[in-house]
Length: 327
Image 1: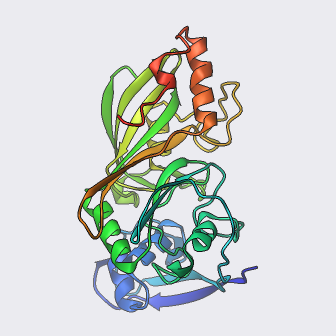
Image 2: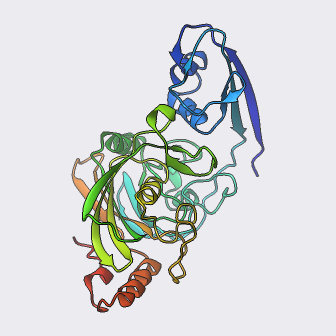
């Protein structure tokens, strides 16, 4: 079990006017700018005694900054014999089809039984790749989001794959079933996302000047199902809960989403939100060849589609029930 404590750091600004997220890394060189930005977004930084979640806040001489940094006594990760649905694997790269209810990496309340524990059992030499608590993890999926996720098996692969995500050359496509029927057949949601001001466990559309980060989601209709819609989403950025927040923002939240859909059910028992990471296309870190991994949707997802097709009068053989894994 982890012993979690907080270290409080007080700093007095002696410089002239400067952005908060640029000033703090100069004063605390042991913390990266990205780590400091996360501390700000998560409400762990105060300016003159008031919580500040906007990284672009201007501080000036005489301001008092207070940081609360949680220190973790990390649990030594243990390999666990958890079955993996492997979509692709070689000496550099592993891509698996993650099921619902599986947390990607250890976190408070989920110290064991994670995808990382399963990967360490499958790849015993992975321990030092990318950090103690997230070995090999290139990107993440929410606990209840299913589908394709990539794991790097070497440091070179990790850097290469992370670079592809940053450069937006890697392609991530999702399938989601939403409430309602969008009028258009396709579109783009370009709305920044940040921590929800009233609930720190949620994300929300937040203006850039108030701490939001650029978030872009492309979408198109895959199938209309009466009062519901099967949609295809493509991520251009990768913010926390991005598709879920953006779908709710345009008035079409993901079915089964416990956080953003206001508990609107459809009479189908789902293990989580109806969101599936369907396709993952990336360049192999060594050969340079393009790899496309396609994750078949889980049984609960296809059952939901069958029920919705029946409700709206579609035939059982309708193509919405057979998502073409070769398309």
